[in-house]
Image 1 (cartoon, rainbow, N blue to C red):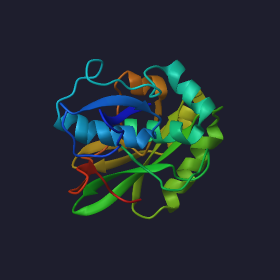
Image 2 (image 1 turned 180 degrees about the vertical axis):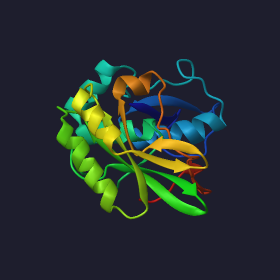
Image 3 (image 1 turned 45 degrees about the vertical axis):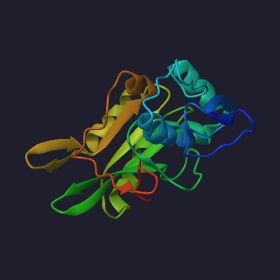
Length: 209
């Protein structure tokens, strides 16, 4: 939950606005929209969370992330991908298919890291399937697996077996795993410089999948 705007005389839900004329009122809104408003309007007007506005429903702990997954797996998927700097797929895939991507440039060529999110039970077969996608997906050099539960030893071994992608003397694991706890601990994907374009009309990081 984020906040929309209300004028003293009548409620509105649009921009631009004057902080002297409007106040915030609660409203349900998608994870992606919350992130967009945070990165554009809230930053533009130098608002402070806890003082000028508040956000509810966006996970701040592993327990809250688990609750989001149980309530809405797709919002959990979007939150996890965007939290790690990726772009969400426009298609609903649940625990199957490519859930998102991260783009980076190698020798003036746009390459990608495909992202998969799993909120339920995990097994070595998940990593084997991911490796299969990695091998056949054009323009993809790496793959990332985000999971709510801790990966098994066999899963880590499967990821290690995929080897490395080397660029400018740096070795990047071709398959990487991040748990939700890892994300809260500040861990990130190990990949070359991430490419982001800017939509001037919205002021947001944007790149179609």
